[in-house]
Length: 172
Image 1: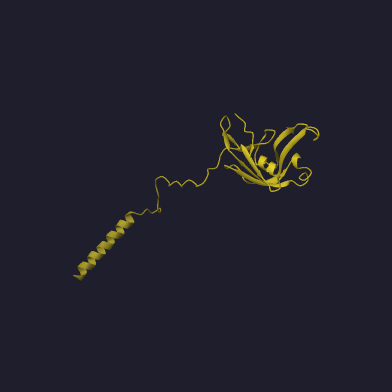
Image 2: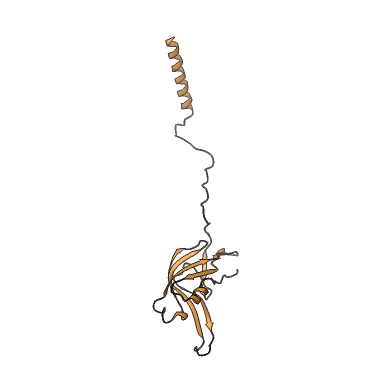
C-alpha cells in the first residue's frame, strides 16, 4: 500500500511540475495588452498654451521682472499743478506661480501717487493675476485679465483702487 501511495504522490508532483513548467516562458515573464493609464492629477489643470499679461502699453509679457501695470493722464486741477501721468509700476517681481489659473509674485510697487515716499524705496507688494482668458485664433494663447495688488503701505483709497485692476486682453 505504501508503494502505491508513494507512486501516486510522485505522479502528482510530476504532473504539477509539468503543468507549471508548461506555463513559463524561457525568456521570462511577458505582459501583453494595453498599459493601465494613470489617474488624472487632482486640482486645477495647467494651461498648456503660452500665458501672458499685458502692460499699460498693451505689450504681451511673460513672467515680467517689472512693468507698468496702469497709467492714466491727470488733468490740471485747481492748485494741484500741471497735468501729468499717474502710473502704477511693479518692480523686482519674483514669480511664485505662472501659467495656472492664478499667477502670484512679490516685488515692489511705486508710482506718482506715492512720491516722494516710494520713489527710492518701492512699497513691498503681493501681486495676484487672475481671470485667465484663452484666445482662440491662429495662435492659441492666454492672458490674465485682472490684477490684485496688496501692500500694507497703501493708503486706504489706493488699496481699494488696486484691489481689483482690469487688464487689457487683446482680441484675435
